[in-house]
Image 1 (cartoon, rainbow, N blue to C red):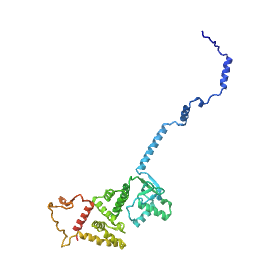
Image 2 (image 1 turned 90 degrees about the horizontal axis):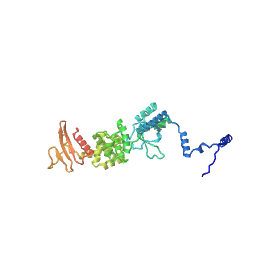
Image 3 (image 1 turned 180 degrees about the vertical axis):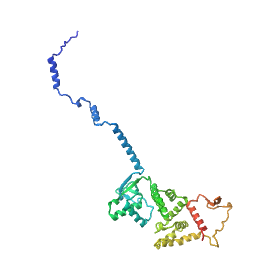
Image 4 (image 1 turned 180 degrees about the horizontal axis):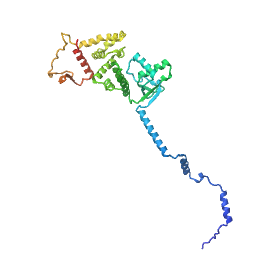
Length: 368
């Protein structure tokens, strides 16, 4: 049989002795009583503030405000104030060749009296390095006026300007933004319009001059774009030789383009190379005799009355009111309730050729 142990209850003196012993023993710290992960969780909870409903509403408002601000900046609705020295005025080749001194004086007087009313438009340069951060899209005259005023008055206030930061996306869109501003004010001369079309091709914004003119002057009529292409041809062939291109009238520029298409570019450049064109009148006097040679080559000798062309030899497939040329072009005479019109057909037909034909018809029909 198992041996039984007899248990006896402790006496009152023994119980008191045990209690005194527990009271004298030092208690363990809270950290010693808790596992490490529980201690970390407790500390994190104690450091995290309790979020109230008001605090959550404030955070939501801040988030919405930040989103609206980012959207406004992306859409160009935020005005920035930057130093004028941080802007490169000719980061894009400008469409304007000259500025009227009288108009510039009026602009400077207005800015000095009332400040600059309209902000400039700029874009961020992709890799500015240590140089200016922004390129100018619009506001060339305003920026020039501010810099002139700062130089004249030494007033540092003219050294800062309000701008709108634009994101044109590509060089073509940047050229379009620049041209549209000046087109709205109708400040560009015909030559300047043609010139900016050529420059935009040279800077890689467009592949051809025709694409450039159609893209930059998309709001213009077909006839106007055709004239711009003619002035673009003048700039391509003679731009480095002309001293007063901005003084070319529309008619003079179109006549000059016709002479260039007739193959007289070399003779025109030789005339300009003499250096005798000391003013706009003298420069045109050098060019006009050569232009008249080109016009005379397409003009029949006068036989009294209105000049006429001899009827071309009729081809077998020609009919009444229609001619089929050997180069594949067809010329048709048609009419409607408004009158007669001429239709040109063929793969070789483009805006420049139609513009030349219209100019020749105009020259033949004008009173002499």
